Length: 481
Image (cartoon, rainbow, N blue to C red):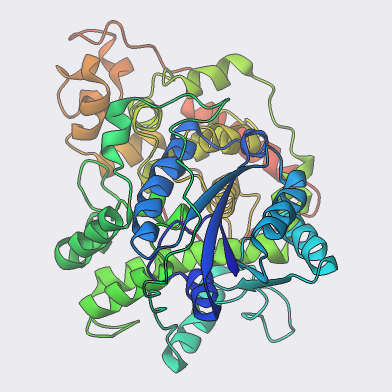
């Protein structure tokens, strides 16, 4: 008997560990509920709810293959080895199959489980699945992990030209086992159930993920490069939550993008090429997680930036978190996050740079707040994005590049459509006034909107001074305006 231990791979199709287990013999699936660990990792209630809803859908599709899904408690990952060993003994399991996960805690958990099982003569197989390339296989000429995305991407493209990762065949139906599936819980202690409105924005299941991918690659990918920066337009794939939970694989995404681009990586449709780059950014940040484990431990990638004199400013932090900074593009973005569990990528950069540069508040505060609210929260991508914006990370924006939220707002939401959607109190302002209601002195129905909590010009100077004072600070290129 084979056991597949499901984690962030909640799908039946193109699932490496599932296919490998089923190829070896009768298979059972297990999922561990780990609320204490999830709380420690700042996983958002909407994300945990999304996991459970997808698990429920997966349970049904596995049942069609006669693969039972068992649910077991392991409040903290320390309990995983004992819990899995107990199950393996009960079911007389020969081998456990998993898809690799990355991050310090995940690696330690899997090593502990492997050792415990090995001592009982049970083999533990782990497979590359949530990435296109195994961390450690894409290295510089001197054998180190890449620190600059453009160089990493170049090597990835060379590899993909030589050999495309194939899609994994879905297992066939197995003979029925005398084991019943466990019901998937609808909630977990410590995590509030999100609003039905939020849930409706993110339907669960592989079918929905596939529908989104097909719709995007059929209709939208051609415009991706030109529309992805405009938050009022449906310019993005809306697949990040499904990728983070493993409801769809990066291989499926890559194959679909290439199919829409006649098999081209770097030529053909610029939209497809730009989107493949985004898949590679996701890849890059997971490789960073493995190559530089300090980023898993709340440390800055650029170690000299640990000496930054961040401000302790709880009132400013609260205003940012609660969408009342007095800067409409920031507040509209934060409301989008609070109400939908998601934020447009351009806006993630704008609000992150505002917090870390204009408010000079530690990026870790923003990173934590995002993880506690994002349905697509992913340690590697979230950490990578925050450190990029804060100029503490890899390939980061040079410290002197500071987005101006007003000019970003005018450039990417010129009509104010996004702002007015999320800040209806500004609906009566015209498209010029809506970006900075402070200019119209609270008139025209914007009286209940707060004044800006910070002066953009003086706060910019303050940030520049803080960064200039760092020991051995070197400016690097990279990033876009």
